[in-house]
Length: 127
Image (cartoon, rainbow, N blue to C red):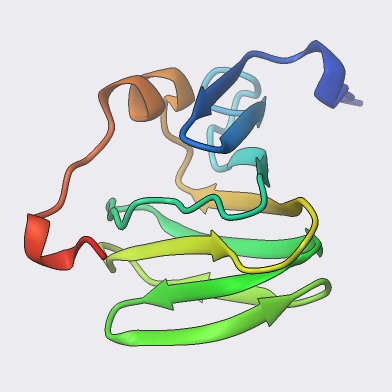
């Protein structure tokens, strides 16, 4: 059994967002999942980005606005957002409390490398 606490994992803080590295490459033999919990402060916004891994976000608290490709939609606690491979995506906290979500991506990627290196997108996509 694999159990890990949010309070004991590596994390990255960036522009109103804290990402907790719950499970990633090297944590299991199969390397099929990368999982983070992300807390977005009120008014915080994730920059648009993309990557080859398929991903889902599951909103576990709060509300926001999610962009995937050309679509933007309001999201709230209990919603799941599917993000196809290489689609530009990002989330913004539009509520009055912390927006928290679980991100799961497959196949697993190196969380530290992905967050520290990041993936920039053309300025035309930033809003």
